[in-house]
Image 1: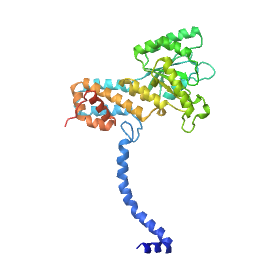
Image 2: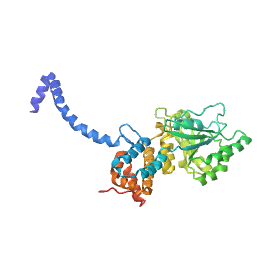
Image 3: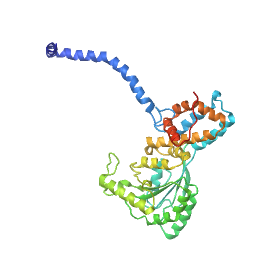
Image 4: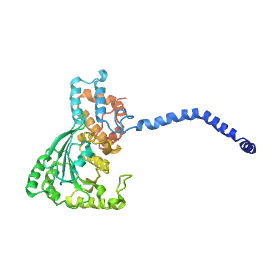
Length: 367
């Protein structure tokens, strides 16, 4: 049989092509049939980190999830008392529509305005390499869309003169009363931050007392020596650059007396470090503020990890409110827990496990 096959192949190469084409055409329908269901099963549940429609939402879509949840509760057969629903809706909408307030500190030219613009996508603040643009506190809402807003208090830089610094410090203290988060900008390639240390020394006790999450941002990481090492293809620092950035991170953590995790190098120009910064911020915020912060960040600053963290925070708040809600709301969640979890978010199982570990049980589904 083998010899015959070889002879046939040698004598008629044209037949070989025809044979191959024929076998391919007969095999095609079969392979299509078997592959289609497999690919559907594989991709459908993993289409997104959260949101109502995994096919269109790459990351957690807070507005859609909230809207869908409340619509489910408004159904005629939900069994929820209208007054109980309105009370629960008010609490959930507060979390969904929360406007975070971020105070940004640092010296003139440290890259504060660039940081705001890159992280939140709002070209509201002036940027100038020649003169100080932020001599007065810029205190306004950055409206990112009809539903998304962030309040950025872009503080003037210290170190211009003794008289101005004294006025600035009073301004700083006033801003702390409304801050959810503090970002303190320091240039990666500069050692001149004596004025920052002076300001930090005067207000750090207020920050610790109020328990405001604070991050020191090493800006312009791409300008750290040796500049020539920066990898422009992957937008990453070279080996020596990275070593210098890690060394600077350690020095800043020691000088300011903070954890090294709270010192993060970034490059606003190239988007380096933004995802790490967003994740660290969301992880440090209380549950009722995680999703609110995530929704105002730019897509380039978001990641699957920060999306999942925002989701978990949101659903923990939902369940906490369920436990405190009226009986008609509790009964709805007990009965529809599986549907809510499967329809609205993928991190449900993870959240359930966390509750079980902390011995705080969520509502149990009826069988």
